[in-house]
Amino acid sequence: MPRYHYTAIATDGKKSKGAITAETSYSARKQLRVRGIHATSISEINARAGAGVSVFAFLKMRNKNQLIDFTKQMSTLLNSGIKLTEALMVMTQQTSDLRFKSAISDIRDRVVTGESFTDALRDYGDYFDIIYISMMHVGEATGALGTSFATVAGFMAKRQKVESKVVTAMVYPLFLIFFCLIAVLVLTAFAIPKIGEQIISSGQELPWITNQLMSLGYILTSWWLLLVLAIIVFIIFCLRKFLKTDRGSYLRDKFLLSVPLFGPLIKQRVVARFSSTLSTLLGSGLPMAESLRIVADVTGNSLMKKAIIQSRERILAGADISTPLRDSGVIDPAIAHMVMVGEKSGELETMLKNISDDLEASTDVVIERLSAAVEPLIIVIMAVIIGVIAYATLLPILKISSGGF
Image 1 (cartoon, rainbow, N blue to C red):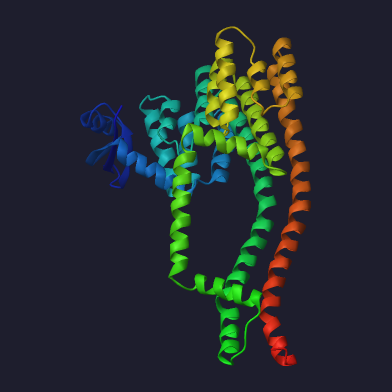
Image 2 (cartoon, helix red, strand yellow; image 1 turned 120 degrees about the vertical axis):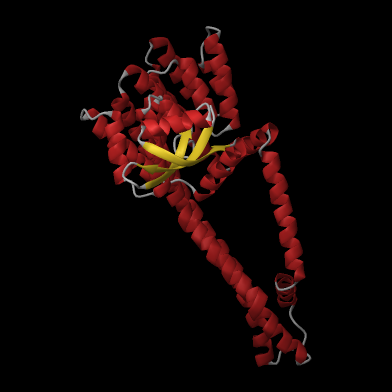
């Protein structure tokens, strides 16, 4: 059904803007009149424009904390007996972010006119992903929307906690690497060339290491740097294009899982995400086949996605799901066996939750060990690099001072 952007005037004289779903522009105006709003202009939002908005919103990145707070507060309001439309009105008044506020306001207006809450959410994929929408659909169908909001809020908070730990572990090493690169750039591009030029102008010969770093400095301060950057950008562009293909994403994910030190961490995150998401979806009342279809779309790993799709096909054929998971190479045989036991005993949801909790606890240990191993290694590498540059800088000066040239 088409979406229309409108500019309108309410009965109190206030101007408003928003979007509305309707079969025709006439139907859109009619819906607005029912709300007590007179449309001054209305235009259809085509698919291309919508895609551009989505890309722009993706680049800006949505505030996950804001969405989690919204979900928690909606759960509290609905479980307190407040109607959905009233709860959305409260959240509209409380939300400070203008884009998110506009989205909530439009969702509320569409629910007031009789549209499904889930259908209204689907038009705001920048905020509400497929897991969110699917669980809201179950809650809306069963009349337990407040419970669904509470479940989603807990799931999102748990997932963000795990992601935050990984990001936090990477901040310090990246910080060190950044300043090391800045120091190297300044010394090789400015300090060493000036010292070298003065020594050469005095008729002296530069040491080999100083001469090499001077050459690097000339490259960094000449048009050759632009050529190198252009080549790097071209390679990155081609690589990104390739990684968007099925073959490219498969090779990337397979490589990441085999990387020393980081491979086990990535594998644990993938399996923990799969277990946690599937457990949450099954607990919300979604059928197994539908839950696996959703999990396959959000797993974030091509190998795991392929295994989940095969598991779903086996479920539809009346077979088990543990065999494709075990053969994927992502899930360890012990975890695959636990899934099989949970499936046979009818406690798959509980078993998946236990697997997720165990893996997340293990992930914390892996992150701590990686931090303990990587940070000293980076410091040592930085010290060596800076030491070499300092040696190349001071060596000619010391030789001149001692009359070594």
